[in-house]
Length: 300
Image (cartoon, rainbow, N blue to C red; front, side, top):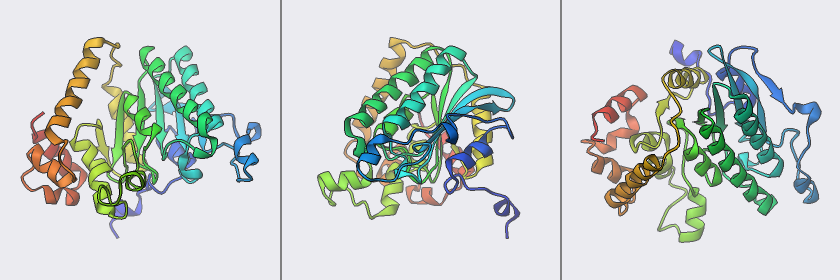
């Protein structure tokens, strides 16, 4: 057995608490609203659905490489990490506290399919409040870093939240998009997007594609230690920029250019070819270091 594989601890397979334990300095995490203070969702109880003592998200304070940070970790194994009223309120509360206390960063461990439809408008309102709170934290000069590599990815409202963060660190196993494959297939038909074609799903929404498209700041291995190293490295060289209209317009122009260049393409392979990748079919086989080197050689 490869020794590196023997000592690797998968981020994709880990629980929210295991991810926090592997990400932050040993013993530094202090949970806010721990199990003894839990308030499970009243909405789920009314529908006779099982709840969770933390409502699918863990929030608290800790340290990363000695620096004080706040962290929120969604539990994808509970209702797909879907956001409900209490789930969202916990995240918003942590973000509002970050505005006041100004930690070195807020680490957002996203693992969610979006809004919890069981809670309808309460879930949608929660997503909108998280969006506003993320922007308030960034405006206060505190970076918010999304870490995406769980089984549920970052879809729906949480896909938008991820893109509102200062940066996204993603693994090959991570996925990022507005609408999930099953949603697209249901609304537009299998001819538009075959949700059962897992290779297609990852070529369009997976970490490698998002990294090549410039949607993510860093591609990391599916390993707790790799996410820790990536977050530490990113924050060491990052200063949260002041909000500006010029910056917003520049980003909007990038999106317009992307739509013009790739809007008619239907597969990651076609997009990679248009980017200038000489052998786009080889991208799924490239390891992280090879893909990083490839991206550095592509025109910006």
